[in-house]
Length: 150
Ligand code: ADP
Image (cartoon, rainbow, N blue to C red):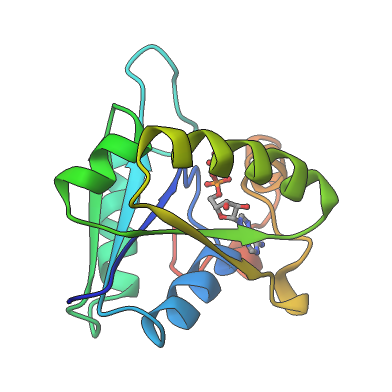
C-alpha cells in the first residue's frame, strides 16, 4: 500500500523549518501532500496563491510532493486523499502540548490516521512563521528563514 502523508499547516509563510520536515518526510513516505489550511474569515499575511506557487517551486524536483488548500477538518481531508499519516514537526514542549492534544482528537475522528512527529532540525529550531511574519511586517529581512525569494 502506498504510504501517503498529509502535512497540514497555515504556512503563513512556509519556512525552511517546514521544508526540512518535508525533505525528511520524503525518505519515509511515497507521497506527501502539503495542505494549507485556510479560512476565508481569517486573513493571511502572505497571499495564499503566492504561497502555493512558491511551495510548488521549492519541490519542483519532487513529483511525490503536492500542495493543496483546504477548509475542513484535517482528519476528513486525510480520508479524501487516502492519507494514513499526518506529518507534523516538533520544536519544543509548547509544540508538544498542542500537537499532543490535536493528535488525540484526530485519532478519535479518524482511527486510520497515525500522526508522525519529526523533531526539528537544530538549525531551524527557532524558525517560526509567527515571528517571521512580525519581522516582515516591520520591514526586516526574512530571506534567511524561507526557502524561496519573495
Ligand atoms: P499550524 O498553524 O498548524 O501550527 P504551521 O504552519 O505553523 O501550522 O506549522 C505546521 C507544522 O510545522 C507544525 O507541526 C509545526 O509544529 C511545524 N513546524 C513549524 N516550524 C517548524 C520548524 N522550524 N521546525 C520543525 N517543525 C516546524
